[in-house]
Length: 404
Image 1 (cartoon, rainbow, N blue to C red):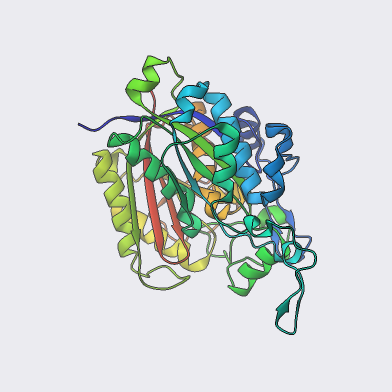
Image 2: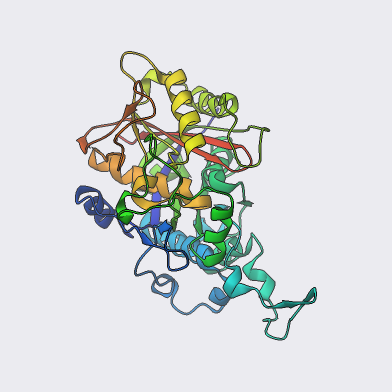
């Protein structure tokens, strides 16, 4: 018999705010934090303002080994645990699953290479820790006292949603009754901007920064890089009820696939993106018609958006298709952290029965998809979250609003 898995704690560090109240007001006030990059004036970014990891950790000697993405992850994990009210004894046996990205802050992190030789005179003894993918998880484990099964996932833009899916599966199938899962990332450094610009993935904008992100619009020309982190406490329903935990939502189904097609471009027919969504719906045991809205990947890149829109139309097309939102038009693309960030924002939206518009959507790339173009009061029950990443990584998660 499978266990039911619920979300009982969350911590979100986003460009819209660091708590549910601030995030909700940002949506209601149409307030975003897009600005031109200090490294490249043709690029717009979505930074997190007023973030200090020490506000969450106090003095912690291992902060020196954490790049900005890892700092977001640690802060969000601390906030999620505090929000959940879980005790230290239970937390000790919890699982820990995190989606992470590479440290691309090469302008600050790397020392000079001369004649093919690395100048190591300025290197810290443990300099490599800022580049190892599991450093962030190690810091979270040490700070919070978590010692259960763990996994660091580095599958590009689907990483944190896949980490969440793995935590869900471990609890569902009885390997754990408690887990912490999420992710953190930042690609706003000069190295990050350069990497994505070389890949021709970023939009070049001549107008106001807030018009830069335009998912599914015919005039889209690339994504706005963002940053942030989000973590969640997941529990077996019986475990959560026994301790009287507040429940935000239930995770119902998860699916993940790989295109096996190209290193950056999605497979044009969307075959395996479609399969990931179908697998999530199958595990949730609900038909497509019961999805009330879709939180799309919606990057604003020409190829990704068209394939995603085609897949949505194929699976959910009909007389009453679900609504579709695109949260990257509000916070930018959080890279490896985007799935966790978007889960957190969706929990706020679910709780407040609100759907935000896809910003700057004037001429949709498909007319038969239910793109949201104005703020709506909407009481949803089932939500599908989609993420698709470089390398052909596809992930989908179905959540249900908790009704006690």
